[in-house]
Every structure is written in C-alpha cells, then in structure tokens.
Length: 123
Image (tube, rainbow, N blue to C red):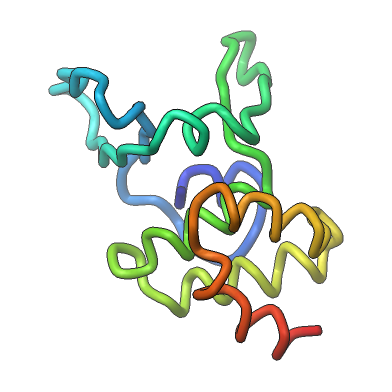
C-alpha cells in the first residue's frame, strides 16, 4: 500500500519495504533479498482495481489510486489511521479518485462503514 501510494504520488509516506498483495489462499512467496511486507486479499479484493504499468521497461501491476486509498483504511491498524486519512484527502484533492470510485472499492473491501465518517468530513 505504501508502495502504491508513492507510485501514485499520494501523501508523504516513503515505503521502508515493498508491499505485496497475494490472494488469501495463495502460497506466501519466498523473497529473501528484498524487504517485503505481504498482505492477503480475498479473490475479489485482489483482482479489482489492478492497473498495468511499465517501470523502466518492466511490466508491473499496481492497484489504482482509489483502491490503494481503500486498502489503507482496510489495513489502518498496520499503517496508521493518519496515513489512511492523509491518502484520502490527498487523492481527492489531486482529483485522482472520485467518491463513487472510493465507495465501490470500500464495499468490495468491506470498509465502507469505517470510511464513511472521514469521507463525510472531507466532503
């Protein structure tokens, strides 16, 4: 998530490790030479919002800006609620997402009730 925030230039966080999403029932990849933090998503949450980009000629998959913001709220206990709120404000201010996009992903990731008060306060 923090890696995707940096990719989308949202917020001020700098990742100290690479955040890697895997499907809930998938094997945990063994990566020993990089600092990696693994998060597990349900099938729908894992596949929705994926964008394909090229970084230095290498194809990579990164979650869209609104999906990344919602993921921050889902994992707010790991990254901090302040990081999630900053990402929400910044994403909306930069017009990288809409309320409709956020609600769609919030429902998929089952955090709509968590995000509601923050979205209402910003609106």
